[in-house]
Amino acid sequence: MMLVLAIVEIFSVILQRIFCDSTLKKKKIRRYTDYLVWGGYFAVFNGVTYVLTYLGDGTSNIWLNILLFVCIFFVTIRILYTDSVRTLMATTIFMYMSGMCAELLVYYGKEFLAWTDDAEVTLLCTVLSKIVWYLIIKFTSLIIKLNRRLQNATDRINTAFFVTKLK
Image (cartoon, rainbow, N blue to C red; front, top):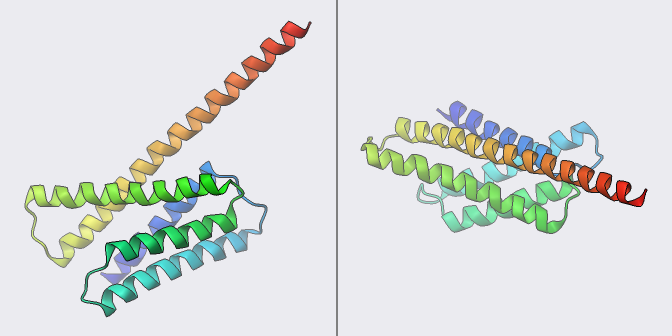
């Protein structure tokens, strides 16, 4: 069961990295530095989250998780990408909010379907929430790419119009 949970968490980090690589401007760094920073993010965030969960009463504090995610994810993308702080904060907030929306959809869906509340169902819900999160991020990434293409096309049309007016 722990192996499946580790695989799901690795999938989450890969998903976050792919989204950031496709929407943010990457710094010119070596590939191993990129892997090292994302690996550090995985180790620190998951290590701290699961240690605090298991040292406590078995539940995690949502406010502490929010603070941990926002701080650790922001520092990670600040190291790796050149975008403005405002853009990086918006990306951080989007990643957290989309992940929470995916979890809420799946866990409230579980309540609606009246599934039992055992470890296997909880793990299944975790996997399903990551799949829903993937779909949300993929859809958002497509919208961002379409918007950039339209912006580039508009810029080319405006440039062509300006050039023809100068002649």
